[in-house]
Image (cartoon, rainbow, N blue to C red; front, side, top):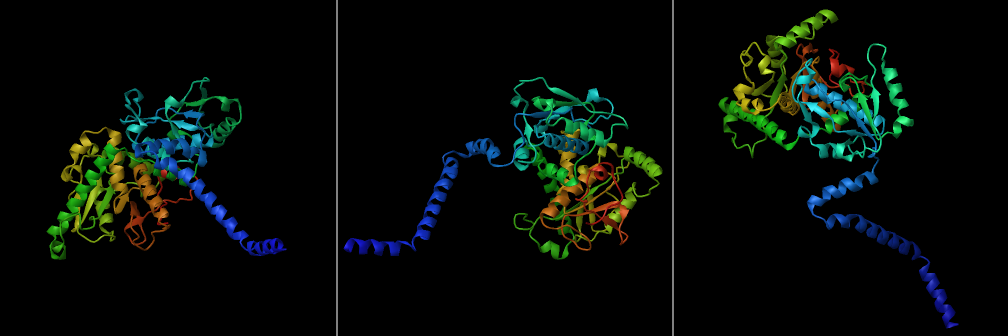
Length: 442
């Protein structure tokens, strides 16, 4: 009898405790699983963590196939044409669910003498591992050492001419999925430069690829040197202006960085010839701008208090007028590479690296002013727009939100240069690749 009473007593008191016990068991199980996941990282040093991450992460997140590859021709022409071509190759590989074999870029700039092009490996300019880390689950670069050569590469010939439409090109890619072609370990696309391939991808996909491109440390160091020189020049200009500025401490470690304006100044001889013909064909007068017109437009920007340094990004070797730093309005102190004292940084680099340095200097400026028919300017603005979108800012109309961009060849409502943001909803890169005067602040 006593035993039965004790059992009933235990049963009555144990009934409410069941949920608590279940929760406790779940917590214990969760802690055991967490320890199993984290403990390998605690047992290895920092040099091994990277290798561990790369070997395990693809199993945890969506991935591009590691055993199927796409190979493309050497990527050529100007820096930004090469970046577009590279992104287009990445997106094509993504469409085929393949890893892109790391392509060769071109260090030199030759448009017709292809034999004179200097190939340079992608990882000599951009960080291979950081690209794959930042673009993980979206696209993937692969080394040629990953190919086992189990099968002969399938050569996919890109069509040419007006009859080779975007629809036909897309059909060709779709036919390569789930067919005998897909059995090949490597699909090798032969024919024209990827920049000239029909475009099937939206602007936001290109922006994601570009955001994954990080310069290798050696080039990044040079970028930092140039930007430091620009900001030092701005600090001197403000100190020399007197007044309240002279009371500021010149120790850059305690003062915020001095802002600067970067202007992509397209007034080189070859550009002026090209854009004049372009204006005649298109019957537009918003493509070319003279030095005087650019200075006038830039002087109307009020985003930054003066004095302010204006860095002029220009192909110095193609200039006929070496007086580009003169004629600027009071409070706008213009510098190009020679006056800034950074020609040694640029002179020891091939064309591609020079352009990469200037691109970053312009992209990181507090205010950027460019030409909306320039691929360089368009991609700088795309980079800045992507950063603004990431900050939750989808418009720069009527206010200074930071990272402002302007098109000096298009007149804004206030008579100054048009505020400029990339249309991230655009379904192709056509307007960025070839230019447009249809730009706006949102």
